[in-house]
Amino acid sequence: MVDTSKIIASHLNLEPNRAAVLRDLYRAAASGINNFLVNENMLQCVMDEVQASNLNIKVSPIIAFPIGQWYWGAKKAAIDALGPIQNGPTVLMHSVGPWLDGHDIAKEEWQELSKIEGENWVMTSLSAIPNERYDELADELADAKIHSVILSNGVKASGLQPPDSNQIEAFAKSVNGRLRIVARIPDKLTTTQCEKYIEAGADAITSDHFWNLINQINDREGVIK
Amino acid sequence: MKHSYYADPRIQAFASMFHFGVLGEEKTQEDVILEATGLRNSGLNIEAFDCEATMLPAARDILGGFCKLHVPIGYPGGNICLAQKLYQLEYLLGQNIDDSCFCLDYSNLLDNNWAAVEAETRTVMDMCEDRLPMAMVIQSTMLDDRQIVDACKAIIQGGANRVKMNTGYGWGTSKEEVDLVYRHFRGKIDIHPSGNIRNLAQVGQFLDAGVSIIHSAAVYDIIDEFAAELGLNNSNKGNV
Image 1 (cartoon, rainbow over the protein chains, first blue to last red):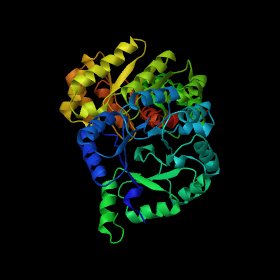
Image 2 (image 1 turned 180 degrees about the vertical axis):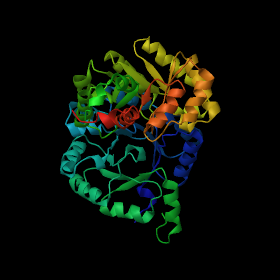
Image 3 (image 1 turned 90 degrees about the vertical axis):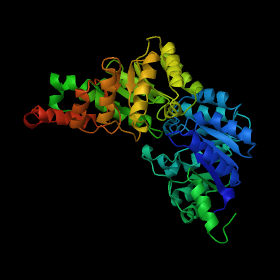
Image 4 (image 1 turned 45 degrees about the vertical axis):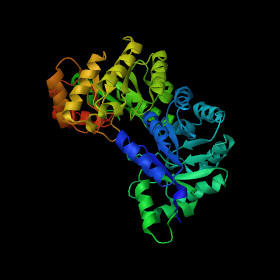
């Protein structure tokens, strides 16, 4: 069953629109959603609204979204600049390519991220990672004390499909409860399909279309939050 | 793949306007080495090879001295914070990179905040101090005609003279957008089309509008088309 406690709201369009971001902020807060994920450049205007309206929601920018292929220093510059503004966890786009290469860049990223105080989340691209390396990724995330891992950036233009139920199930076995798995939901996905992701092992889902999902949930008897 | 007609001076001159590369979150060193080696072996004299900063050492090993290396800043959405973008710029200046583009904060473009666009451009150009050729990316697909013109004005006022119309990554540049900029700014700003440029007919349209740099993942196909137009790959076709 999908319930709203398992939904993480996001507004990560590559075409930023302040009015739409703030609309989604209010929708998320009104729905009782705990976390709202945004682009780095939308953080200040969203947090201004959170404070002005005293909204009870945690807001995080996804650092280096959607590609993440930069050295730690660039990501740290963003963490230092935005950390004092945000009220939600640190969320970092993983250097997937260098990680696949076994490059020191990726190792440094885990080491340095583990030093950041508070709750840290990572966004990765599970679809780009071979199944035989799921254990390695899960171990490294757990060692870095990552609280939650989001399995996809959800950007169609990347050419990568979001992970399917089989991939989520396999990765959940590797994770074995050591951190929270968050599936990113493509456009127009129904609650029925979301339930399959959760049955496969996702602990939560995140979507820019969270409002549609909530409406679907509220329309279904017995699944109302 | 290398065709014998790649050595033809007309092909080399034509190829010299193109950017081509490997970008994306899942791209590995192997991907970069494969494409860079293919390019090197082809002998094609393209303008620049585009890659992520993390892949720069591998690209430089293969292509250093052969073609320019281009690393974008704030790619693809321009939605990272200015602090991170300026860190990236500082890093690339330290690397003596040949060429770059800077994805402006698109929220400023959509909100018609031209003073902010000009200020961001000015900050970048002041840091570059003519050490790094820089195109400012405006993601023109998101903008209407008046916004495209105003964006280019802000870029020029900020001290830049190159506009990259889109990043690619799902966005494409139309002939109409390029014509618009050409009509308004003829000679004052270099226009760099990027995204969904797949064939010779499109390239021809851009050349008519004064374009001298084109970003395309289909560079080999376009060059093959151009060679066919010259009658080269009918009579002289053959891999070397």
